Length: 372
Picture 1 (cartoon, rainbow, N blue to C red):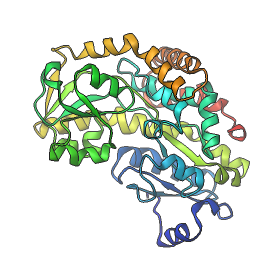
Picture 2 (cartoon, rainbow, N blue to C red):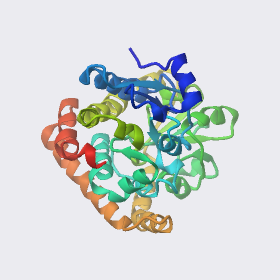
Picture 3 (cartoon, one colour):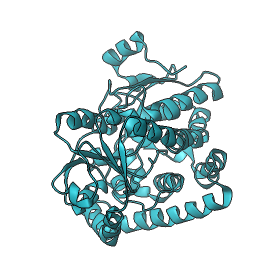
Picture 4 (tube, helix red, strand yellow):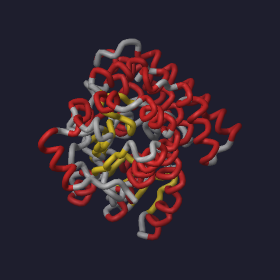
């Protein structure tokens, strides 16, 4: 059963704020995603259920979906000040508050190895980016686990067959996708993935640069006609294990350790189950709905080559302008980690069990919950 927020909890939220939930070990997590979003269904809800079981019911998280407590842009601050005890922090929507994390988010990983990308993203924020951990502390939060989507694709309402067809179109994009969109000659538009559904329907947007799972999660397959079947990079991570620091400190050491022990299960659920495993069925259903998939026969791969030629220099400059110290070190760790994870997965296998074990061995066995 999915965690549910009760009327009583809502009343407590209104009167006192959820940051005071320490004594009962009951906590509230606000997700901006809808109830049927794959990350909620296959990532957050199972994680909270496992936490309750592992702690014998001492830790209970109520999952409040659909942005009822906070939208995407306000989540980092809402968690930090205790409007809710946890939420999904997405750096491009809070670029000043999460500038170091946005350094990672803004750098697009080439290829299509989603599991290696997720491994690299989580290893970087947890172990290779002290600047990230510092900004979480300044926000009044702790953060240590996130997810990666499958490579982004251009999902368009009008028919798009060539890069030339993209010129002048309005594309919802974030992170490195903004640069990709500009290189294609299109106009990037900033809005949440959920808002983009209506914008596509009304013609405010022409395309979304997003993951295949979004076809289902946001209903894009009801308004799109064309998908460019050429990977447009992988960015992230949206930080899922993003918890109010006072709520975190209110837990016993055993409770905090349980959250870290189960972090590989959270990431595996949000990445392997919700992205890699789900993509095939989602794509087949999209085709059955009449959406055409345009193969990369018209130069879309060249967009990524052009992006990669200058993205490191661009990201470093933007990060320094945002006040991030030593962004070069963040990117060097990130890129090296991605290469390492590709080798590890090629050696151990790309199945779920191997991925989950590598997450523990390479990352979470080394995370000290008392040092977060």
